[in-house]
Amino acid sequence: MNRLVKPLIGKIVLVTGASRGIGKGIAISLSLAGATVYITGRTIDENTSASGLQGSIHTTVEEIKQLGGICTAIQCDHRNDKEVEKVFETIATEHNRLDILVNNVWGGYEHFTDGTEFWNEKGFWTQPLSRWDSMFASGIRAHYASSVLAVPLMILGKQGLIVNLSFFAAKRTDKGVAYSTAKAATDHMIACMADEMREYNIAAVSIYPGLVRTESVMKAAEYLDLSNSESPQFIGRAIAAIASDSQLMKKSGLTLIAAELAQEYGFTDIDGKQPRPLSAAEI
Image (tube, rainbow, N blue to C red; front, side, top):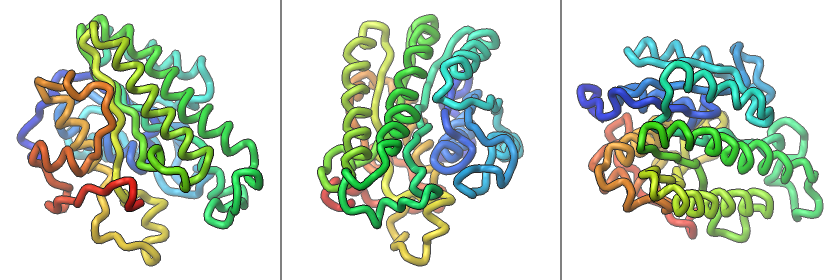
């Protein structure tokens, strides 16, 4: 995205789970598009994440400010309804509206730290029940709860967009029962939300990234083919593009692929490359 083009000037945006990874990339891209961005996350100090990965909500804010953007961080555990409510109360007090909600926060990745690596597991019956609970409490329910609180603010502004980050596993049966079911639920929830919000001019979509060069992926870079990978900012560019589309409501309720949106709207990744869209059969 050309930094001189700022299609989201004046828009108020919330990106959940933006201490690092895709959430951070989305926040950066939307701020470069001119939006006033709020972010949430649990990590407030570098090198204190349970995952052992670098990043914090304050680091994200500083990077955005260095790029000339506007960003506010609010510490929030999206499993805690009171903390989530405070996020939306802050936005309501400061702006009395919300234009875009990006539901990126996600749970269920404890296999990186609990000693039960998913690639070594041979059946859903051998996995801890906590895996399911995390994906639904910190994933699906978190997306639902934030959407419930976002919609009244969007109605005040007479328009809005809710984006859920999802993945091709929703279309597969061999990518883990809990994970694939959770992603399928994400997509269906978006379709149902879109149906109920249409009369208020509020759109809802799921977006599928490809292989994204997040901190966790780059730790395993030597074992991966990154030739068709995407930067975390690429997903943000996709969201900025659809949010700026005057025909956005035609996409409401759909699952969209970030790389296909790049071809449709004519944007590239930050390195100038045009990632090839993947299909469910390829993941």
